[in-house]
Image 1: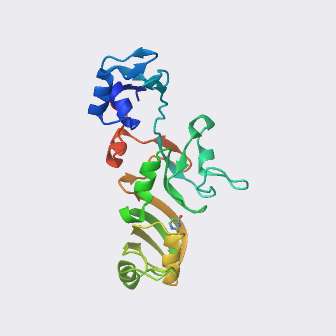
Image 2: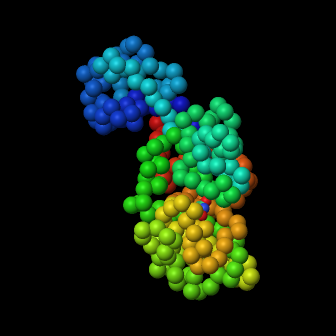
Image 3: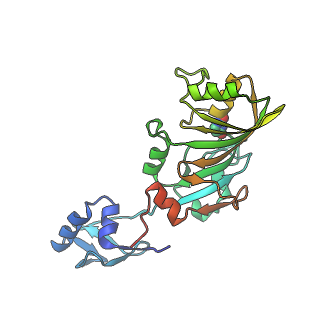
Length: 243
Ligand code: URA
């Protein structure tokens, strides 16, 4: 991954103006790089070193970072906690700065968790208005039935003001213990567990396998993380690395 960006893109990413506006600013000698007036919009900026100023005011560029973590059980989805191990502690210290988890998985839930410093993306993925699909694999104490499927498709009363939004339940196996996939578009507190409780059943194991376009990679073991690929970033609309 490059740490170089075109000057016009660098300025546009920072919100200085649109790409054509910043080109004009360059023409008007309002932009300097390392103290010298910038001449060309395609001048390469070393994000970690170069000092760029707009009308004499120095900018700082914070690059967005995106990591996909396979959360193990036993970690809380927080940046800090005085008693519990946090998901961020699974990353080396030098990578943690500014990162936070996008949404929460319960301490005993495993699976896909996105860690980023990109507040806009986090908002887009978590906003209830956006209806982003989240799919969970779960093992359930009890026989999951067609009636459960229908109830989830209608929305269930989990003790909140409103019923849950329609959710899609796929039964993988059904006996004394059942295995299911459940896709929900909300992120209410303990939502999957409470949905099954409302049907008189208990979630005994829960793992998130997808969130929006992101899938938990089969080769990413519990506790492991990796950066999002370019394709994953594109799918989230956060491809800001290209020159
Ligand atoms: N639903 C739950 O009950 N727990 C989670 O961690 C995520 C969704």
